Structures are given as C-alpha cells and as structure tokens.
Length: 116
Image 1 (cartoon, helix red, strand yellow):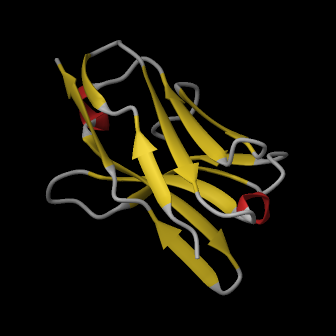
Image 2 (cartoon, one colour):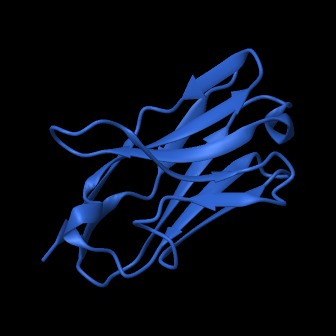
C-alpha cells in the first residue's frame, strides 16, 4: 500500500510559477512510475507528466512541454512538478499517481488556480 500526499498548489497570476510536491509512504517508492494528472471542471482527467522509476525517462503532455518539469528524489520518496509560465488553462486539480504492474495509487489532489 502506498499513500500519496500532494502539496504546493495555490493561486498564481498568469506567467507565474508553482512547484508541486508529492510525498509517498512506504519503502517501495523507487519501484513505481510516478505521474502527475490534472482535472479541470467539466473535463476528463488528463496526464500531465510522467517519470520512470529510476528517473531516467520523462514524458509530457504537448500542452505543458517546455513549461513543466517532472523530477523525483527516491531518497526522499518524493516526486515534484515544477510549473513555469502558468496560464489560466492550467487551472485544475492536480493529482499524483504511483503505478507499477498490479498496483495503482492516487493522491487526494491539490488545487492550482491561475488568474489572468
């Protein structure tokens, strides 16, 4: 069982930055692919960024490429999402996800609101 706790959301003006963190419990964090998803009101949840278990490979949604950076610190059981040049369309609840074969865990989400 893995518990995920997100933090770092908030209200920011367009062009600003935020850094989200997701702290995971348990000793097997380094075996999980970690991802950030987001869900805006009235829209489906979408993948924002993902990072492999050792952190060697990352993947981003086209809408955030060049603005967002996902990283992880396996010694601290934490994954991060650095978000720069935020835009109003980035407004959503951001969720942390841990996945490996046979296991899939979600955090409770953190709200990010970008004002124009």
